[in-house]
Length: 211
Image (cartoon, rainbow, N blue to C red):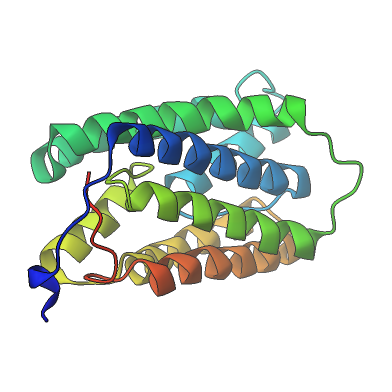
């Protein structure tokens, strides 16, 4: 039986809500690991972390990751509306808002006395990867590069994880101007962990639940 002949099991509204809340909480916790260990990830989240670290280095501590993450994603909504539709865009807008909120709140809720960089990279990357996977499977993304990666997968069959991995590599190269080499090395490990989770578990035709 071909994939298109298999019966689809649409997600119910409460399942979408639960996935969005849990997925964004996972991502928010992963970001907390990264900010504590001063690591970097890719996509618009990586850009937001870079701006956050840079602003802190300049003594501007009033703007956190949540502010930068929400602001950077604003220009990408046009592509989301044009290519992915209003439903996807509204879900994405809500998810970005929740991650921005949870990333700030989690740093107040959870206090780390000491977190080894290797553990922070692997656990933070895994948490963000699992959270993004949950969002992807419920037709939601975290904006920016995620929108582009999902669009290329839907239209051209390119793996979302591999597309994002390539773009993330460019962002991590820029990080050398802001972070020490060892921080960048751990960040690369975390980025590989995150994107492998998505690439191995979000293949076209493997998961057919729809919202």
